Image (cartoon, rainbow, N blue to C red; front, side, top):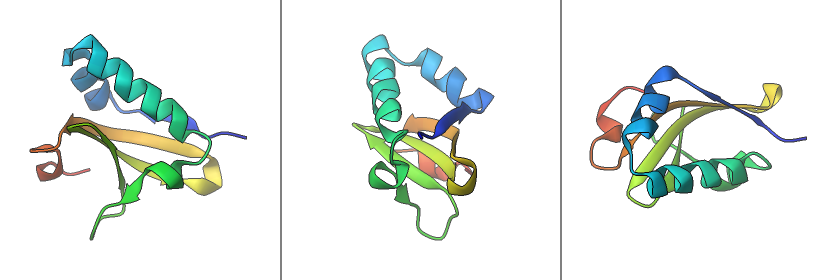
Length: 86
């Protein structure tokens, strides 16, 4: 069984603004995480959410293992993605 990906509105809007090649790279990476997200995502220090590194971009998500769900809450460039609340 694999995890389900769910997106908030903000990360979808951020993805739409990115160049196509970066957008596709992020989607491919997220698809890989569906089998075992804890292998790819890292827990953020002093926060309950996780990060996924994709080049200079970061995907911030909550992972609910008991519900088999990855909830993407934020996507952005590494220089400013951590400034915003998850």
